[in-house]
Image 1: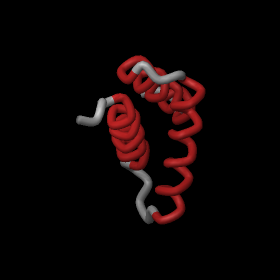
Image 2: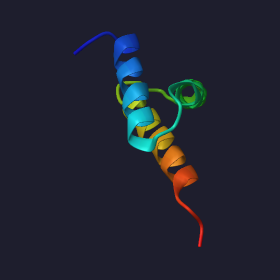
Image 3: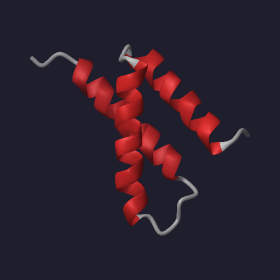
Image 4: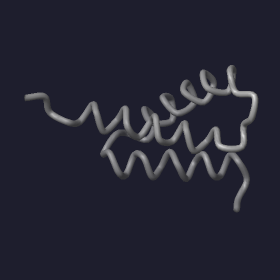
Length: 67
């Protein structure tokens, strides 16, 4: 397991690749979500997992066409 920053960078790159979104946009959303969740988290062990899931879902929802 790498450093927290390296892990964040990996997650950001993976989300960008999976969703086709620009990495800088993913990074901005990731960091905003991390700050929002970290402010209320009493335990931070799984914080990056929750952030990754939320950001990935948000970008997938953006690219899904509405019917």
